[in-house]
Image 1 (cartoon, rainbow, N blue to C red):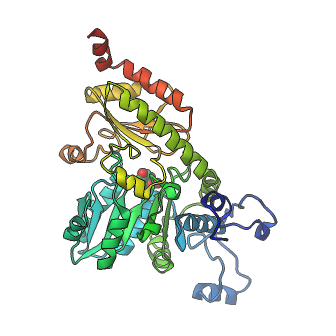
Image 2 (cartoon, rainbow, N blue to C red):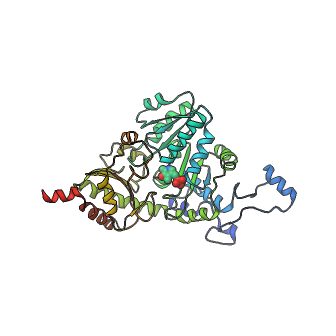
Image 3 (tube, protein in one colour):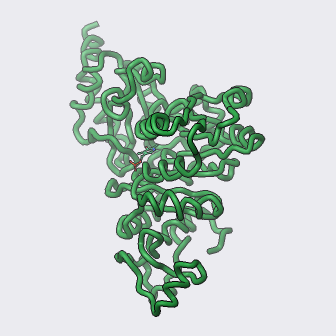
Length: 402
Ligand SMILES: *Cc1c(COP(=O)(O)O)cnc(C)c1O
């Protein structure tokens, strides 16, 4: 595939050549568990790695391979691997990178299950982790230990939308020869490409924007061939969290519209952010494309647009926050994000319910905070739904009385 093509073209054409598949425009779904050999000797050669070809779908499948080649090109990396979930991808990478007694330096906030995985690795293998906003080079240097095996980052951080400077962190990590892993789920390669900023490994929960239609659980990893071939032959093959060919096909289908969808998600979110900022019953709004955001300069540096996720805090109590969700008409109450439908959730009692209260508050996740994944509906309708729901809260009613 021609690497000089623009993103919008690669997202449609990379990783697939219809001429090799009887002219089929859509990538065929190779719904097979295994692949037959012409002879016993061919089987021997395939297992010995002396001959290219498929063996068994846990070790590779043509539909899955098309997806892996596409995501590798979109992230600007040399190899991609697909998994049965975002967490299968995260665990395959972290287990491959660490051994007993190692240390992992992490961003201040992490996806709940990634946090759970780190806790398990600590209990079982004495692998420790530190969490930091990593705002300066000095801060990163101070936290790197002789046994630090990787730096693991989410940016934007869920749900507070704080950002970390990927180029700066990658530059410092390089001095110590420590790989930087980035969970790029919230941004997708259309808005942010960590490998181009010097980071080493990119992970996606493809369940979210990559799929975009709320019908698949999947994960993706892009990195150097040397590292990912090892993952393919160890933590992917032997732990076995692979994706099904049909789910890979659904991701290939969803990916074709990624730039169009991300433009619209970002446009809608920016519009709703502006309305929220003006609303008297909303205490605070968290959105990266905001000149007053503490990390706005990082957004300008590494993100093409602000993305589709907004967090906000209302005036009132936890019950008021829950009432707001109950007051909505078409915005759906659900975790997950990145779908055509606008999805809303209450982090304190849903995605971050497992985080102890003190720690949760330290992360800035209050009982009044709500996270909205802005969908592809008309932004005016999304705002109308929110505004009506807000107007029914006690704070709004008191406002009328005054
Ligand atoms: C959803 C999510 C994950 C986990 O992905 P699954 O596909 O649900 O396993 C990891 N990281 C982030 C940032 C996520 O949003």
